[in-house]
Length: 145
Image 1: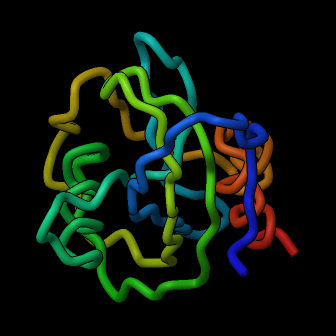
Image 2 (image 1 turned 45 degrees about the horizontal axis):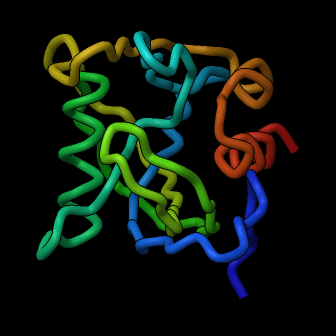
């Protein structure tokens, strides 16, 4: 059974499964996050949806590069969780199946290309409180243990 985080399931609501990949990128006592401005104004783990036909690892590399401008190495899947939510950017309700990885940030290639995203290094303990997704926060909090 995969643990669920976030809002409760809305009875009668039709959810579409949306697999995604997200990564914890620690370096020293900090972790690389992305700050998404605009509609959300929130700190997040870098990552996002896996496109149809795309494999998780290439999706992870693509999402990290788009949202942070960094290349990563040695991704290791450490767990997963489910989250039921409305995705306004897609105008749909989704059951997000979030696969969480741990990897090394190895090279900053430039600024994020994803609109309204900024790469931010945060102390891990601070990120464990600031990251918007409760599932992501739980995984980051485990790094502080």
